[in-house]
Image (tube, rainbow, N blue to C red; front, side, top):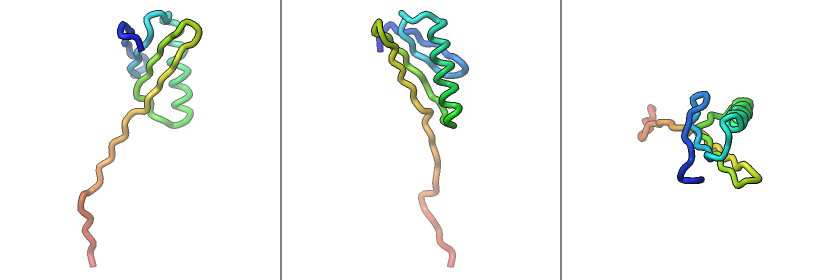
Amino acid sequence: MHYDSREITIAGIPVRADPSLPPEKINQIVNEVIRTWTWEGRKLGKIELSCDGHWVHICSYEEPFTQLVPAKISVKE
């Protein structure tokens, strides 16, 4: 990812995008990724888009899942 990347939020999802990508293309890609993840029942955390001139590389990350469980389990007899 380029250090001069653009950081925006689309539909509540943080997006880091290559500055060479036009806003319309970023929106199109992000909306498709959101649709795919929603259809799969996954929780999208963030998206990174980088462009090498011929291809757009899409890295999408799942939102972290945190669960708390008791450290001690008491057994009643």
